[in-house]
Image (cartoon, rainbow, N blue to C red; front, side, top):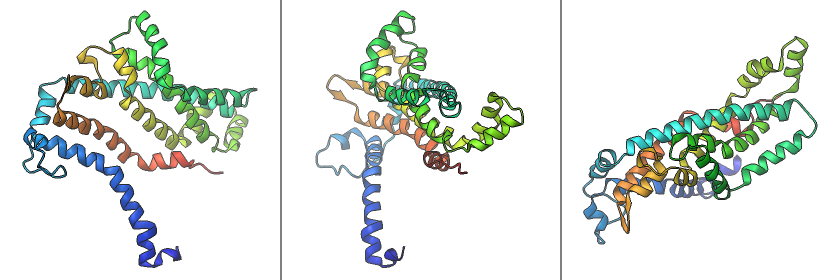
Length: 280
């Protein structure tokens, strides 16, 4: 830390890199915001400064909220993401606990297989999944996405929770077994309370992946009323070669706010979940 006492060194090693990082990170959101508030005249005017808004307007938000089914898209996205996240977490907790804590033969191989399943791209899986969804009569319904999203959420959450469960001391579990506790009681009363940061971290990741998912939502949903936000704003606000940029950016801006709010509320749990907060 004495190295940072010098102001020039502090600028070179701290302030300038952080400034560049923040600019790269926040500039897309700034671009979305100014485009959403710009009237069509400024968007089409080549002489206008693209980085400022001269006469801000809410016309694009009005078009998005009242002339399109955007509120229904937002509701669909919230319901599908929330249900998929909780269902995936429930399955992942049981899988991660059994692999890391029960110590059965082949546990490491099973954990590796689950991790490899996460690496399979959705662009390969959506073809056989589409056939299954159609045969079950779930095509063009919310259940089509609720039941298919866990195919990539459960492997990821299981892999993440396995690392966190590994950091919980085995002595706590052994003492509970000596006192007569069952495996279920240990999981509910000891492991899960200690693993709250890991659960929140996995939940945030799962919710974000569900919220931003595009391929499955585009393949399994065709009705405008059942679409999610990522698919709805792309398919409904682009008419041939006409791009409604103001409404597109307004939809993207509003769609990114819920995820940002979730991250802001649980950022401390998220960081501790990624680093493993439980120590012996």
